Length: 352
Image (tube, rainbow, N blue to C red):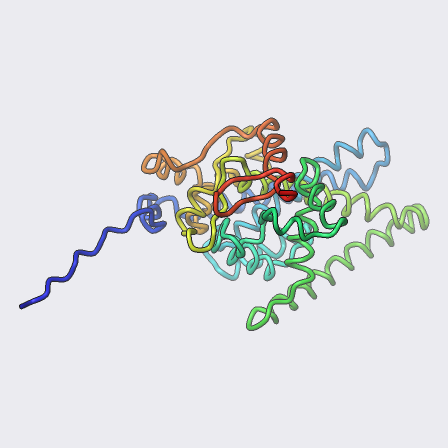
């Protein structure tokens, strides 16, 4: 008697199904759009930095710091796009652009490629894999010492996103970390080149400051031009990453329950931001669902890709207006996490 094979069940909730409905035009890179964005980005960075070099009046310095911090963030977003290989068609050009655009934010492109492109995008919101804003369980929090608990409470507060990004992402997963295997040499090489470039830039500015105003100016000028804008950038990007993947209704998934579809579609957001901020500095980075569905989509095509995805998956795509009220609510509710129940918990859960 001939055995009849059981029918193969149709695949559902596959990320490939989502990618299949994205129009082909959404993958078209534009040298003109990329060139314009890069020229705009560097101009918006150079203008406040040069202006800062010629004034110490606080009422000019403070707004110039804000503009410089936003500009460093804007260049970083373009570098992030290039690091994904999505800005221009040439692989070598993308890597070079990423290295240059990430230099003002002191980011090592090869290390960022591993931590962000491979791990965060490969395992978004998966327990034990995605290290970016990975929540602690009540049991894990209960095991922390007094200082670690205090640090966690600050970093997961509405003031702490920059401190978290600076320690956990920038320092621990990039500058301090040396990957084993074939990526190690590339990361060390990028660290060396970037370190030399930063030393030369800071040394040149400090020398100019010493010539113009003595020792105090030699110390103050690099801080004013580079350090403060960097710290503002860290807070802006830390907050940006937070709102993309942490909210009371965003799930993190146990290892066995996680899938690419759940991580990229159900645990990622589309946030509407003021158009002037988006055009000048953020380059559609808040249209985050299509970016996670397929990081090859260039920034200027993300809105069109988002519309196609929302049309086919209207009940799945999470979209809302970015607001301070929503951010404050998230930082109040999202402290610890129960992976089995799929819900956020307060710190009091650790005492139980």
